[in-house]
Length: 120
Image 1 (cartoon, one colour):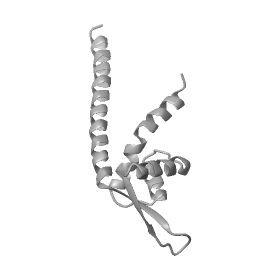
Image 2: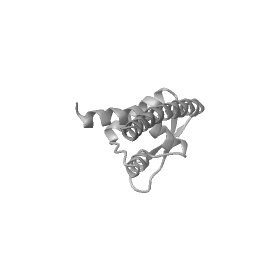
Image 3: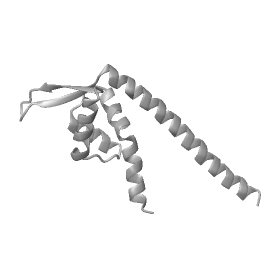
Image 4: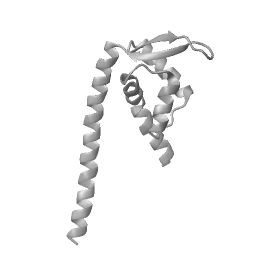
């Protein structure tokens, strides 16, 4: 089994949640989303982000507005819609449930290892 492939699949599984989390904090320009993700050691490429933003917009979770730029073409800034905010809350609840379940399982595993070691 390849750890890189498994790690990549794990990151893909939480990508929407992370992107929506960044946008939830305030209107976001795609390169700002990428920078925020990179600063959290979550590498995200434009080729991954733009299709995802389009999919979220088509699902009516995001809206955008154009802002004129002094240096170059206008910029598209994304924000959550009411429907997007509700979806985010559902994702957040799901994430918290999943994170707690994983922690419980991994803590049990660590406790069993410690108990087995101490009982030897």
